[in-house]
Image (cartoon, rainbow, N blue to C red; front, side, top):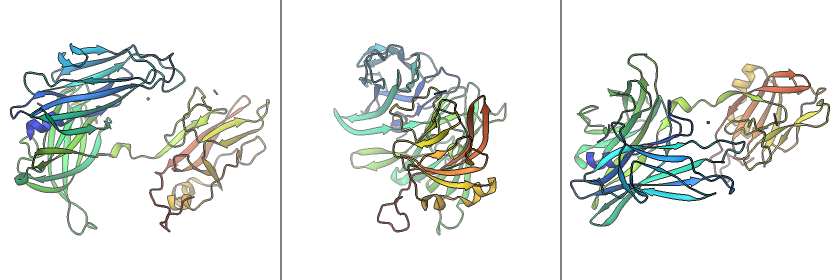
Length: 433
């Protein structure tokens, strides 16, 4: 069954994933690459439910150009009985902040799986939430007319390198399964490398078997790890898998999206838990950032909105403010609870190696603005400061270059973003700042 200046059958039915933006598809597409519907041979019925939310907050942002398309695994239209009728596509009509439920009815003649594309052809504006659709989905599993399980599936992301836990006890039907969808329009291969957990954990994990999963363009596959195509002799195992992709013809990485689930036996039948993946290709936290004079910065993402929008509801951490008409006076102003700590002039090596997360957590952050006027020594390459964002992240920032454009002084910034402090206030080693 599996395959974005101012049980195998049970597993096949339950594996689902989302892709926020799929390569080679139109801007605004969201993909649900595994959507089951129907009743299995053991009488277990499975249907897919998902909620679509119009994020536009005003009556001027109705959703009328978003369509939900159902496809079979081979890419042909899939006519599915749903609460909106029986068809292979449904165009939405939603007012501001409306939620629309779409659900299959488990009336397919046999347990069937396909995928869904939610295509958003609405225009965009300077407000990020206008004409955007939020998507949440889950499976409802029933037997004998009663719901026995609900599996909620979070948004996944395109990736070329990922890890997730693997646990197998074949005798107890404790099994890990994975669903993979090829997001490329060419053939793609996923190499899966196992690493087994051992004692003591301070030692390196033992490198185990590896397997290759070949995928045709836009093909999807799903299976347990002891499937014949993967690791048929994997009976008892606890550890992790590292997955990497490559194009067998062009020899470079092409994206996939993955979902991993753990099947656990219970007295009422098997149930499923989501295994959270780590995306190795999304771990980089350092970046160059262009901050134009007069514009805000959200240091968490990081992003500077080229529409401006410094007074909207987004959690901006600072605004690059011009103080007078001739543009000789300017400053960085903290916003919405964020704070600054000035670190002075730092070389690249000092910035990279001496300013650690421990250093950043020991600083005192305040709302005092940072002067970047023409006469200020701060308006220079290597000036360094730290931000405690309004979401609790610590960010170190260094001016790499001051870009002069007429009367404007734009900034090229080096930034490194750390995660929020996870500690409780009572833990002495992790005081709140």
